[in-house]
Length: 175
Image (cartoon, rainbow, N blue to C red):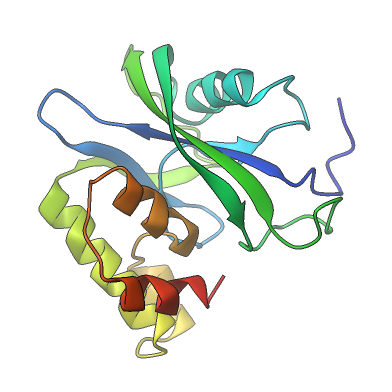
């Protein structure tokens, strides 16, 4: 196992939707907001794909049957680890996944895991924008989080929510 006190600088994210078009999200236990399964890549995994499969299994208990890459890029999102080779932030690769199995949520990763409709995702993204503008407190955010700021762009790129470039920039500036 790799040293997990230093960030490896690489993150994977996984968007899972069901046959009703809802997206699987949960409130991260580190109070960063609602997101899909995600994690560091090279701490325990050999590739982005193996990390995606493992994070889905570890965090929500589902088995990935197919992965499709759809977004990537460096994001200056915070990390609970010491800065690694890329400094503050992560090089992300985000997948859409097809899954099978029953949800078995890791309580150390998520609370309030649910299938969210597009309208619900839009409301959560609006809350994130409100938070990014400083219009709600950190305590209010912990009590009722929006989308984790780093995930808003990924959901826009997946065409699961819409947001103006100006509003996205406001959120990006909080990373």
